[in-house]
Image 1: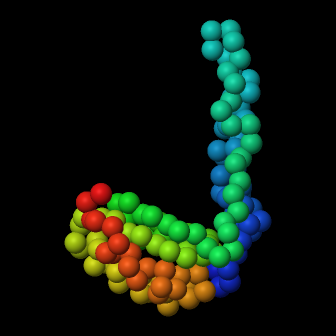
Image 2 (image 1 turned 120 degrees about the horizontal axis):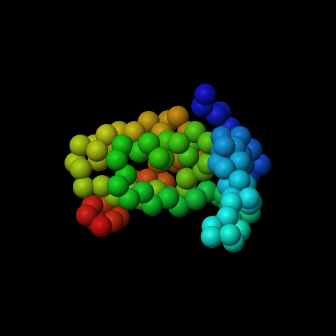
Length: 127
């Protein structure tokens, strides 16, 4: 299902928590583990949360491929203010360029043409 409106903060965080419940449970199991008789201290005691700014994010996509990462962010309701694409594959670039136009049509409030108009020329393809 593709969201129709822009979602920020709590909505995205709730989706993340539901989708990653097994990860949270696995991380909490480290509390009882031991190594050489010493308790193992967990790297994470709680999920790190982040709320994207309402004006949108700047996204640099190295190995951009056909833009599936960008599509996933847009489907989550994130606003992408600026987008930079890097990939050396000419076919992937053609597909991605076509999909950028499609994303602008599907997500006009989240991904304006101005967000990606220089995305294929701003950086070299072989970073």
